[in-house]
Image 1: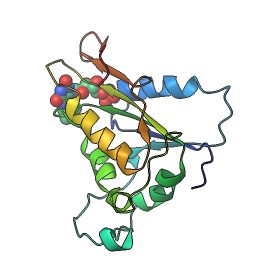
Image 2: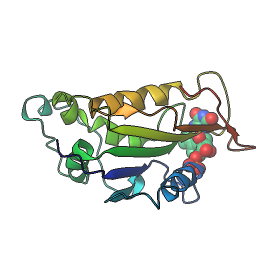
Image 3: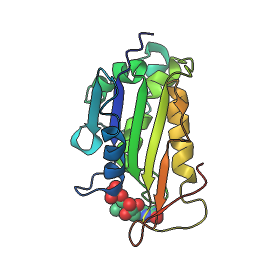
Image 4: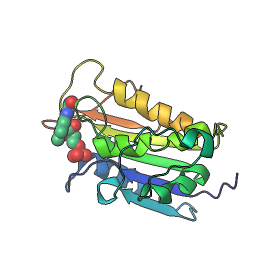
Length: 175
Ligand SMILES: Cc1cc2nc3c(=O)[nH]c(=O)nc-3n(C[C@H](O)[C@H](O)[C@H](O)COP(=O)(O)O)c2cc1C
């Protein structure tokens, strides 16, 4: 695999003024003085990515038959060094367009990409309220996604915020 320090930055919130997107922007801005050849910004709600239709053809071909914007992301997902993802919590899970993006990486699941510890993923999640296990389903999904594309979940640098609809608080124990 040709690792070229490319960073994929994925904004999962469809909201114009987004708390989770601003957390991610702060993180990306902190990288300005570092030598990064390419940062690819992707505001998912501006792309046309259909849900997986479960046809199963990717199990043998390693490719998705749906010809939409997702096709641009397959090579990037395979060769980027880091992925940063921000997202709000919707119904204790991820917004549907982010979930569709993740489901559409099933061709990469079938490629059985070996984990490269030099590649890592950081997440920035925000939830309007608080209740036990509020972030658990989303973290499980995102870890599954990172495993699928062969990258390590960087939990130390990830940030989770709850009560964002009132007084935002940082979640102490990172899952
Ligand atoms: C459709 C929808 C579903 C939501 N579901 C939850 C939820 O299950 N739990 C929760 O704490 N907040 C929920 N929220 C609130 C958002 O998680 C919260 O406002 C978040 O900080 C928004 O992030 P953003 O500004 O980056 O879009 C929901 C909001 C919307 C619009």
